[in-house]
Length: 272
Image (cartoon, rainbow, N blue to C red):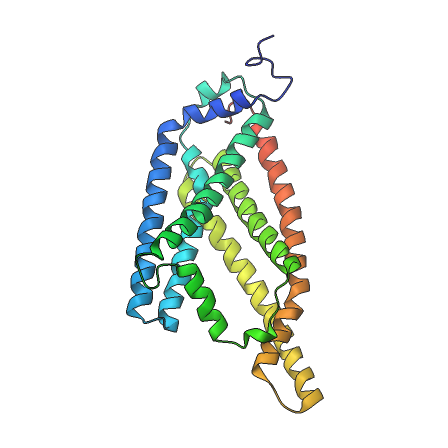
C-alpha cells in the first residue's frame, strides 16, 4: 500500500503535508516575527547606547527580551484558522499531527528566539559599539558582582538549558491545547498562558528566594557577625540550585501531562 495512505506507520511526508494547509499563514508569521525581532534588537541597542550602559538601559533590554519570548510562546495561533471539513479528510494520524504542531512551534522558538537573535547580535557587533548585546549584558552583570565568587559549571548550564527548553515546550503545548479546545478569543487566551505562567513562577521563585536569602543572611551573621554582600549572593545562588532542579523536574512532568492532553485532543478527526 502507498505510504501516503498507510496510516499504520508514521510518515514524515504526511506530517509535513499538514504545513501546506497553513502555508500562507506560516510564511506571514515567520516574516512578521523576524521583522519584530530585528526591530526589538535595534531598539535595545538604542536604549543601551542612550543610557550609556546604565541599569535603565539594561532593564529595558530585559523587558524587550521578555516581549520576544511572549511573542514566540503564542506561535501556535497560526493554527487557529482551519477548515475542519478539510481536516477530517486529511489522511494523517494523531501522532503525525502532534509531531508537526509541536515540532513547528518549538522550531520557531529555537530558530528565531536563539538562532536569529544571536546572529543579529553577532553581526551587530561589527556595526555598533554595543551591537553584541548578549556579550555586553553578560559583562555588565559580571561587573556588578565579584565574579570570582561565582562558578557556573557544566551541570548548572545543562540543567538551566533543559529548564528553559521545557518551559518553552510547556507553554507552547498549553497554547496548542487552547487552540484545539477553544473557539473564541483564542489570541487573548494564548497570550494569557505565558503571562499566567511567568507570574506564577515569578511569585514562587521570589518567595523561595526571599526565604533562602533571609536564612542565608542569618547563618552568615551568626558565623562571622558580618554580612559580606558578595558571599551572600554567592551562597544564595548556590542554595537556589536544588530549587532549579525541582523546577526542571516539575516542568518535565507538566510537559508530559499537557503533551498527552494535546495528543488525545488531536485524536478527534476534525481537529488538525
